[in-house]
Image (cartoon, rainbow, N blue to C red; front, side, top):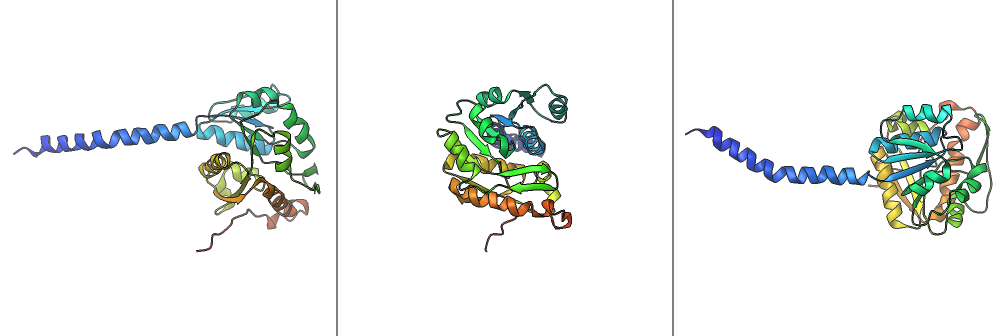
Length: 247
């Protein structure tokens, strides 16, 4: 008896059963990263975030004061994926998710100048940090937090505090940390928080839900500690946060 035709039939039947599920999984993964994200700010952190988001499959638009500048155009040439640049308000208006990555000194004017962002997910990775030079930085004392302020400025948006206490070089390549890195995330909006946690995990990070947006105060304090090594020139003491779960 020729067993080969029977084997081919069995293989064909298995493929017919398995392939639809595999294709559905691929389509679901593609859909997960099919949104439009605006990254407002083209500094080191904004560039790193936009690059990684484009790699995941998101359509990324950088919002810049000077979208045609050599700096911004050079950034675009380094990105594998769909990335463009325009003005800050135009980028924010066209996106489903808006990442704010601008200096603290410009935060309020940029956020308020972005227009109506009702219903959008806002990822706030800003800190109340004044940077005069690489080794001359100062954390600003406030009675609230940047995260809570952004939510106040955008009352009908879904603000999520994340990525504020991790280095841009580690966002670019988490393996540079030499081990696991945790992204603590705070928000008053569970669905938006879940979306951002998924993005962080797809980047290669672990995540920790720290609760409501008021926890932004604690997360911004983490940055104060994170920056000590940089501010004091103790580069041998640099670190990344990793929260180890209790067994």
